[in-house]
Amino acid sequence: MTTSIGITRAHTNIALIKYWGKENKELFIPMNSSLSLTLEAFYTDTKVELSDTLTEDEFYLNGAKQDEAAIAKITRFLDLFRTETGDTRRARVESLNFVPTAAGLASSASAFAALAGAMNEATGLNMPAQKLSTYARRGSGSATRSLFGGFVEWNKGDSNENSMAIPVDDANFDIGMIIIVVSAAEKKISSRAGMELTVSTSPFYEGWVTSAATDLADIKEAIKDRDIHRIGSIAEFNGMKMHATMLASNPPFCYFEPESIVAQQTIRTIREERGIPAYFTMDAGPNVKVICKASDIPAILEELGKVFPSEKLIPTLPGEGIRTLTEDEWNASRAAFEGK
Figure 1 (tube, rainbow, N blue to C red):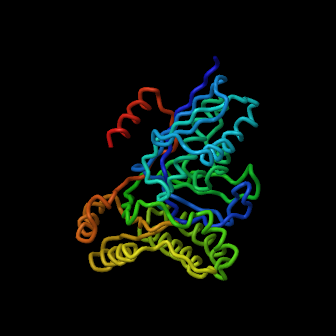
Figure 2 (cartoon, one colour):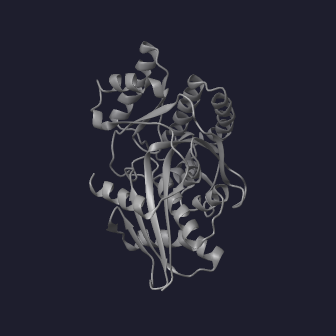
Figure 3 (cartoon, rainbow, N blue to C red):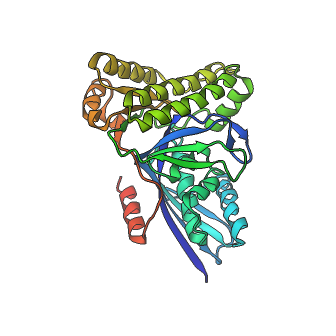
């Protein structure tokens, strides 16, 4: 029996300059470049075991064996690596997702980044992270950015080889984020379906793509200057423009829930009345992310706690890029997950 194992942890990321819409659906090449912050609090641990005794791929998520549709999606992704190496062994994939799945917290980003890392190790390809990001992209576009820590740009590119992640800044300064979990339920409209409807029907979409390029250049300068006000205001502006394209789609749709609006209003109040730099962004889901100074997190949590229960507020610092786990670390992670 020939067995090869790879185990990897990847953290999720939140886009500050959004990716919304594909130029090439097959290769997952986006309409515009984007930029994100990798987060410490949310991550996926994945173990891949390649074995010549397996007759088909197996996929277990959070301890539960997944259905044929989920396995087929994983198989298509693993085949990218098999094609590269000529290794035809089937895989047993186990993933522990410390992110609420499909709730607008980019769980697919950490999931496919971790799977790419584990497969990279198990096959012995050992590709550098930047090249590996072109593989992660084929599973989930936002996974491209989870290969690195801190601020990461996903360069749009124009081919499979150059649509990749580029590390921008390690975020080793006074910056953090608070996730307001409005809902951890699965979304009624998937990101993929939402993107396709927006691109094909929203009259605002062309303006979104053009302005996103300007936002990206501006926020990179703000990051270089460590200017939390500009970082936050650019991110807030960019995120709300993205949601405006959805409201102008046909038929219109919206990921906001009533508590999403309450969260936005609360953050504006904290900023305008308390003078604390706090800004919000939202992905394709109802949850609200607060961009702020790490040193201001306790004060912001105190204010948010007057409106939201503490279990809905998750503070986080910037996270690291993907890393290999030992068997002992994997076992500890599984025990921690089972003990949640």
